[in-house]
Length: 188
Image 1 (cartoon, helix red, strand yellow):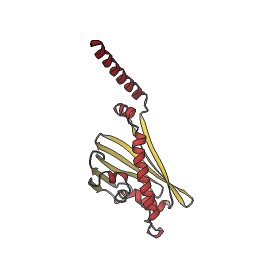
Image 2 (cartoon, rainbow, N blue to C red):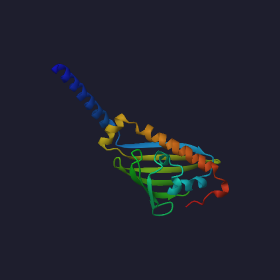
Image 3 (cartoon, rainbow, N blue to C red):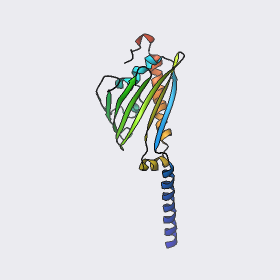
Image 4 (cartoon, one colour):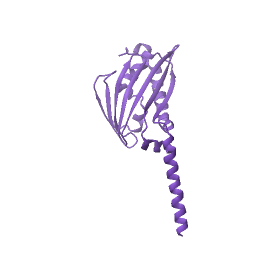
């Protein structure tokens, strides 16, 4: 009986050591990036990204918790605009602030999660004209501390977050393509 318990404990210890060893080989930073082609000019898309109230109309996270508490502060749009949320277990709690905006081609945001775990990342939206269309890229990057590396051994961050980015970009595309050209808001 003792041999069986010892063997089970040895297997568990080896599995833990293997996970820790694999985690140690993971990179110290991550990036998740998705892109979509939108049949609209960048000037029509930019306000949907640079105005955080309009951002909420296509964000995939709004669907996950329609009852989350939202607080907007700072500028109405562009640099200095910020958004805080407090939601369910899926959404957690955090803050998003536009750190830089270059109309109509780029918006950089500072993303701070408070709950379910604390982390600080950078989010970039780039809008690249391509003929009558625009390639919209949504990227997030940041540091990966050792404890997060252990989680990355088990969970594929690119796959998990990437699905949300794809859903959000699909909604952004639908909204931007539905807007009539005359309703295009001037870039801020």
